[in-house]
Figure 1 (tube, rainbow, N blue to C red):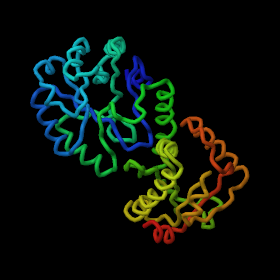
Figure 2: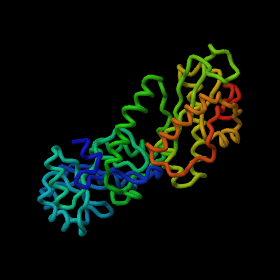
Figure 3: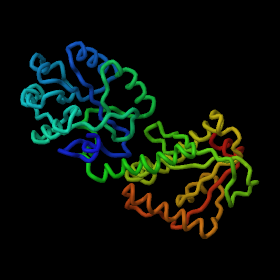
Figure 4: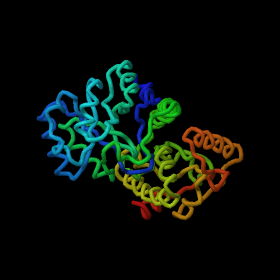
Length: 328
């Protein structure tokens, strides 16, 4: 079922622009008490959302109560025409069905199911949250720089495709497994944060440090940087620089990074790091070719059409004290 949703079966929504801070917010409403709670919370926050209503509940509602919000569906889609009347426009979004049979029923009516729920926001994501959790979620979204909007208002909203299912599988099997094995710390909670960092118990060549020195290796949040870069190179660059301050905070606060004597990255985007004060080092030819192949595979996986300005990866590094002086 989840695989069918991710692949856009029967027009199931995927999400929107992966570099835009707007996220689609939908709220399941199963009773009039739920509706009162949701409307009060949303009004206090100044936020509009998609209210997922059952056709049975909707029969007794006045359209004026829902002003400013999108109407979506919940439960049996046979009642969709009644929701159209309440909304004053065709309803297009429906709550995630419990079974594949229900997904097909939505597709035959031109309705789009919401994707599987997620525990954390991301640019362009579609979030579904119960009224009781709404105050906490709205506070978190504001703190992290996200802007909740109705599903219909998410920029570049689209249905899922088979490529989305492939990318999800790649992320779980490759990137998430690598992160677990190497203790990668995800610092990309903010809408414009793009950095991850891994503690290492050694200093890889060609760092001019003893082999036994502890270090911290920078890793980009690939989907996030691709999404930001698709908006503009300047947007991505500014997000990159802001994210270095996240690394500076982690160096001072995370126990696993306390012994790191240097911060480094192996990257094709070494020119921005050089501008940010990093020293560039040439990699051994075989190592450079190996990393270059890996970066090309990442570009294919994430659909990056813009080639990097450099085609040879290099190592960029800063000693811990210098990094903290600049970004701590």
